[in-house]
Image: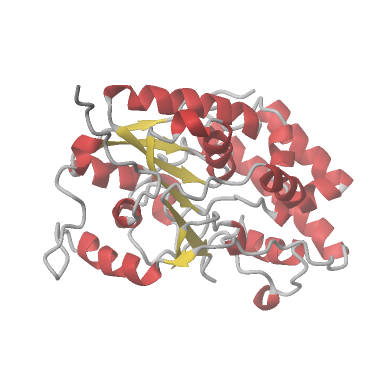
Length: 347
């Protein structure tokens, strides 16, 4: 392991070396048969409603043009926000604070916010168990929980909500998932399929980050497809899936090309739409309201005002406004799980 002082620089250096190995392997390998993932069923297009809300939020307004509230005035008193980081999130937060823009905006609106204490280098099932405890802790005040997740959280949150559904259903009001790998990513399938890349990636996770390489296998398309078939997401949970597609100016353009190639798409302009890490079609949770935006895998979670996030091009939307708007949109989705209060018995 390396010291916290040099951890971010060494982390970036090792990622660059892994990318170089991937480029060599991909350049010498034929394009594979498509390993892309199919679209989630029963989703609805939330982009028009999202953009209407976003215009008001970005302009700093509390109301819509029709006079309705963007967020109900009592939302901060009824709900608490729990953040769920993605793969390697505990390390990348040292490069730029995770969800920082959204945290600032939500706190300015009075919301109480905590970050789930998870091991972002640990397998999905282990983190699902930990997330259960975090949700119970966050809801102990009587408030319902708003879950905001990124990347691997798209596997962890569904696993927790499905496995502990009876216990957590009353505790969770909504989920907003940003560029989540619900159905995995072919990029990791590609890494796992080739001996050299698999060895490098496993060593990176185990020896550098002190994690469990099983977390990579948990995010392969092959594993996720089998998992969600047996453990489907409870689609009656009000959910917003924010699906970003990397712009051509994105710093993640090389990995965008790699992902398109590993998914069998060939050249960049014929590959699967993705954000440089996850295919767009993998980001759509079943039953969710889907929002399509331009932005790479880091656009809505890395601090845009300082650190690495301040130098990320290709994201035309304000990250803080995107997160606030996603919460506002999710709270507008009727909760089909809600039951009317019971009528007191008379004797």
